[in-house]
Amino acid sequence: RAIPLRACTGDQSAAAFALGRPVETAALANVGTGAFVQRVAAVDAPLPDGLLRSVLRSAGPDATYSHEGTVNGAGAAIDWLRGRIALDVDRALVSLPAGEPSSPPPLFMNGVGGLGAPFWRADFPVEFVGRGDEMAQLVAVLESIAFLLTVNLETMQRAAPLLRVSIT
Image (cartoon, rainbow, N blue to C red; front, side, top):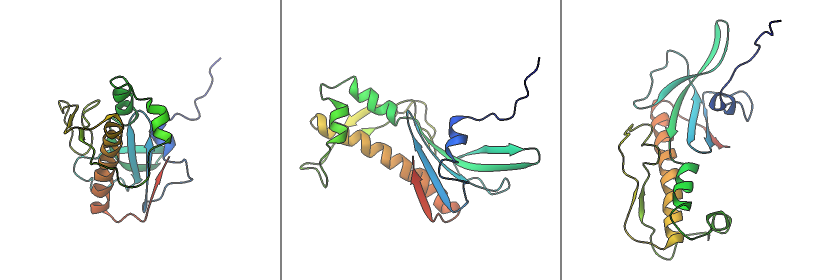
């Protein structure tokens, strides 16, 4: 006996609805192994350079589209670091000191999984530029994720103003 398919979705499409029906003036960042920034966009809206167009929902002729930016190395970058240092990364993540670090962290070149949107470089390096202790390296990895999310949000912002950003 056949069972009818009523719904089919992927994690990024479903995440766009985490806080209710998505709207064009808001962006949602979903952070996991990778990180993804999405905002609703009309199917005929110009696609900002380096971003993807995705279908969030489709019901016959009625569809909701998005512009999407990807950060390949989010949780995967933290896992990459976890395998290279002795620091208990999980404990350190919940006890990061607030404010500016006592010394600047190194720069983390976050090519974990390749550099995603809007740059798209499969061969981007994974390395630290500069020195720092293990806590400084963790901060550098976190800063790289924040930087790459920000670049994607700024790319979306140039296409059309955003009023709100939510992170899940």
